[in-house]
Length: 386
Ligand SMILES: *Cc1c(COP(=O)(O)O)cnc(C)c1O
Image (cartoon, rainbow, N blue to C red; front, side, top):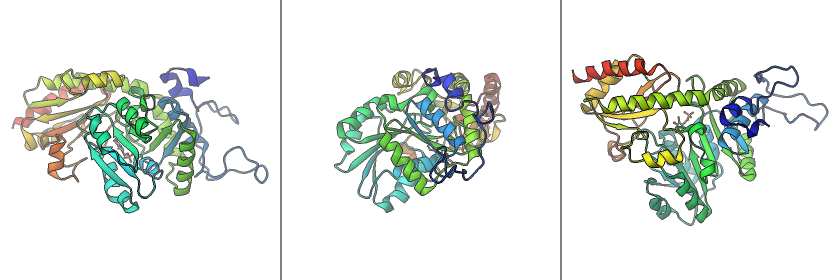
């Protein structure tokens, strides 16, 4: 019944009915490795927690509902989810990937997977013709992220879905930045959606996790089999914390989007800032696509400082409410320096080709009062001139 309801209602109720045994309103933390069977071969659907656990199942049902898929699988981290999807591939297979990719995915695709003879072509996926040109007879998957990190470029996911369909390959979308509140790739033609629930879905910077959502039963069964065979599950406490985050995703995302919009507009007016990258700004190259593909513009704002590296170091060291972290998506504001942090491992030419410079700073705008955040950035920007 709850499955027909709106996003906010499903986030709180799907998979989360009161506990049948006790009436507990909130899904309990089933901190148990194993389940007692009534007779040999007779059980209630749970045997051993690597295969299935009730707390984890509640999270998976909620996430599946929010992404509009029938099946959800949660993992011990976003990278475990991404690796779980990689286990669908075989030696000799090929994947076309957007070149503006999360650093951990890039590392997995360039260091681990080639050892299993799975190959990747990195393309500028903001131009759909480049994706199509890179498809080979052994291509099995298209792997996309939109908006991208940290430059917030937009990829047309419906076009990717068309290309995938035409070539009989699977489209996978890493929807971590947008969250299911702002974008549902399965509706745009994706076969698999992956998440780092560590970011907005968990939302409080206190639990690492990942998820995959699919609508196709065969793919779901293969993912479930492979996860049980390889073991990348989250524990029940982590699943419980993530599910607690899910309940407030909608209200947090509305606030993240509103605050990020205000901050982007504020930064545009600042003389210390040479460029602001935010899909909500009318001048952003992906603005029209974002307005069409997403229900809001997200909580991340990236800026280039006119004063380059020294200004970026000064800004990152001077903010009071934005903490200098590798993470994003928490209720607290975070500031990061892609050149040396999230993208520290890529060679300088590669960073520059993506638009990341020594003056680029990424903000994950939290849900503190926006006037406090603007005042904090104002005082910190004033110090970048010194
Ligand atoms: C953080 C992140 C990941 C990896 O997730 P972990 O939970 O840190 O393993 C994958 N994709 C994107 C877009 C991310 O931001």
